[in-house]
Length: 270
Image (cartoon, rainbow, N blue to C red; front, side, top):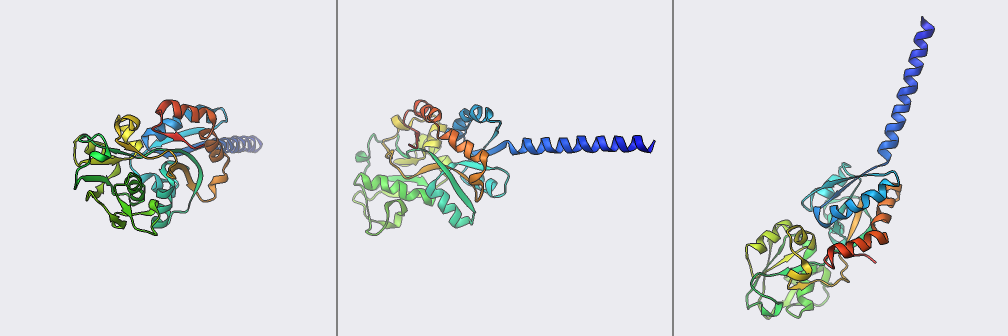
């Protein structure tokens, strides 16, 4: 009787250990990535089959704002996120103390200036209201657009990408820059014809059914330094699943798909 009981216990332990081993293997091959809906989550959906062939199950967690993805990464509820540009990423780490690493650049989303009232920047009247996001990391990017077009001048010694509204020293048209808006709400503000011009990130423009190449009255250059990246916790950049994700996103197959799908509104990193 005792011998039979010992055999049963032994078999139970063997099956239990085997089950644990399988669970561990399965969890190692699951990759959870937070992303904003357009284009990030759409691009990740195209990558899913590539990773599946490598035995990696990609779980995409869609998040609609710019704060939650980094909080989720810091709290370890996701393995990586894909939504932010390098300047925003660096500012978040500085302000929030996140210990993250850039695992690889994927694409650029040229930011655009939109208006329901005017067809070009030159048509903007004196005192025009320019509505932009309250994300400080975007301000230099936006002001660079106006400086490049000769509408404002930034004081000497200030790097354009770091410029803030108070750094404007010459503003012939007395443009009124109002940075009071959540970035994801700007498409609706534009569609409601508020302000004279509205600055909208391409991911939110695309999500609202706008075509940046056609609808923007001015668009950021494709040479922008605002590359969207895969962000991970420090030390995870060498994780095999993360490396496989970045390689798939940077593959010619995915780059070609991005070019065809977004027609210049989203530009893959070369």
